[in-house]
Structure formats: structure tokens, C-alpha cells
Length: 159
Image 1 (tube, helix red, strand yellow):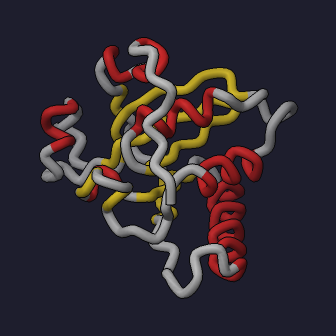
Image 2 (image 1 turned 90 degrees about the vertical axis):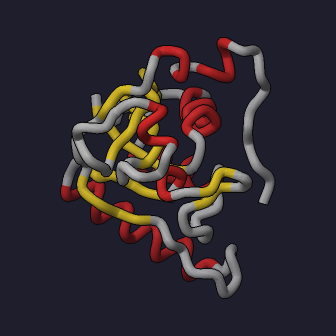
């Protein structure tokens, strides 16, 4: 199994889209990219810890490629808004790819460049960070599978 970690705004909706993919074995909401001493939702939502809300995706590379997982990441958030997704504002909602391997880094960089050249976002710059994966802090249990637990269809934002 392989692991990929993405920040794309509120992790509830991000988790939902990844869970739909054939080949995704598990998803987990959490925090990455900040002060390791802070790892609670209350701390992270303050925007002062440096963390991003992330989803860690465990997937079977025999059934789905990193490129296919990346495609879902790009399709389901706005990578041109710095530290914001819809009404969620703050660095904890930033667009980020936390790579676990050199290959993931290379694929992510090529994918970002391809998206920028595609013209999909017009003249807007893709601000998605591509940075090494750091310590993953699992979010509180009530955040895991939040939309499913609360029978919500999605928290997807239209762009």
C-alpha cells in the first residue's frame, strides 16, 4: 500500500472525494505541516500552529495510481486561492501536497505544471505547496468520516 497526503481546505469534503475511489483502502483526517506540539482541532483551527487540515490516503498502487489520486485532488478544490477554500480562510485550509517519496514529488510537480499550462484557471497562479510529508497528527475521532456519520451529502464548494 502507498500513502499520499493532501491539504485542500476542510478535510471533511476532501476525505469524502478520496473515499469514492476504487483502490483507496483507507482515509484519515488529520493535521500536518506545523508545530508538532500542537495537534488538536482547537489549536489548529486558530491558524497559529502552521498545520494544514489534511487527508492521508492509503491506496493500492495495483488498482489506482498516484496520478489518478492527484487528479481527484485537483478536481475538488481551488488551487489558486492562497490559504482559503470557499468560506474557510486561514493557512490551515491551504492547498498542499505532502509528498512521501521522491517519485511522488516529481509526479506532483509535473501535474501542477500541466494544470497551470492547461488554462483551466486562466491567468490565476496555482499556489499549491509541494512539500515533504512531516509528522501526521490524526484528527479527533468525530472528524473521521464526518459527512457519512452526519448523513451529509458533501461540503463541496463550486468554483
